[in-house]
Amino acid sequence: MAARNEPLVLGFETSCDETGVGLVRGQTLLADALATSMAEHERFGGVVPEIASRAHLEAMVPTVHRALAEAGVQASDVDAVAVTAGPGLTGALLVGLAAAKAYALALDKPLYGVNHLAAHVAVDELQHGRLAEPSMALLVSGGHSSLLLVPDLAREVRSMGRTIDDAAGEAFDKVARVLGMPFPGGPPIDRAAREGDPTAIDFPRGLTGPRDAPYDFSFSGLKTAVARWVEARQRAGEPVPVADVAASFQEAVADVLTAKAVRACRDAGIDHLVLGGGVAANSRLRALAEERCAAAGIVLRVPSPRLCTDNGAMVAALGSRLVEAGIPPSAPDVGADSSLPIEVVTR
Image (cartoon, rainbow, N blue to C red; front, side, top):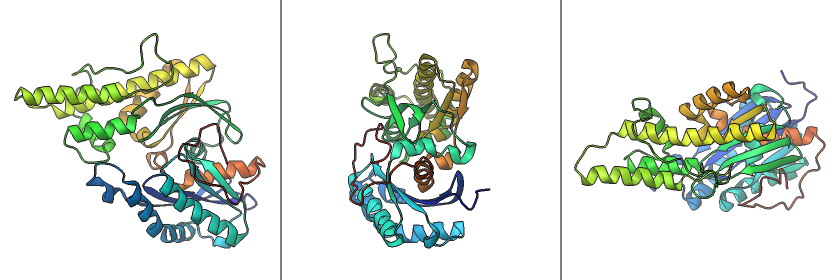
């Protein structure tokens, strides 16, 4: 249970297509309200920024009201407001910032513009308690595949590796489209892969050669290899074994992500790894990470699938850490930064 004297933080997340509003007291999650515009983007095969921004505008106030009701608190009980300032879609970020600023101003409370990626790390504390510092974090989502060294979550986060081209989530979406599956591609590929053979097709593992960057990621070549393999079968008039393709593709992604994460931990002398981001809900990625971390003596921490995806709880969690650490709040005119570097935990 949260102590009543711990600060109550209201968090806003609007970096992409999810309108998230969370309430956190200390390390206790009180409410996590979410509205999604995913159905509106599905027919386009990807997120349309203008549609996402409009959906945030329409969903914002009702989502705040649902969060307050779920937590059993009033807006006047809030002690601080946190909001994603970047990275993300500029228009979507601006909607969240405008809402957060309005609540902070109306309530006369401090405002924290926070980093979306650091928030994905912070959310794990709501489920597993205080993060061991330093820790390593592997964040895998539609727009990012990142390896982060976290000496101090409130003050210092360093980039160890990043996406060079397509992130893992983007590759899932594009491969799903090739296989005739709906958007977003992660869940249907995960389901199909359960009936397939992950060793059926030897798809490439990008950036794993001796001269490649040891912690960076590239899934563009893998995506292209899958598309060409499927097209070759179709040209030959042969059936496409969808389950085997899904399982083999998924295995290639999980193999690269977990191998590089374990290597980064070993090289940096870190024995705690946090797995987060929307793709962290993938069953094979979670299982392989658990297997390899156990073999390497690394403690693996993975939030529940709901907390892995974008949500307001993660922003409130990071805001809570910043308040506790005595970090100065952001300026009232803090702006959106679609490419906010991970080294900037709060603006």
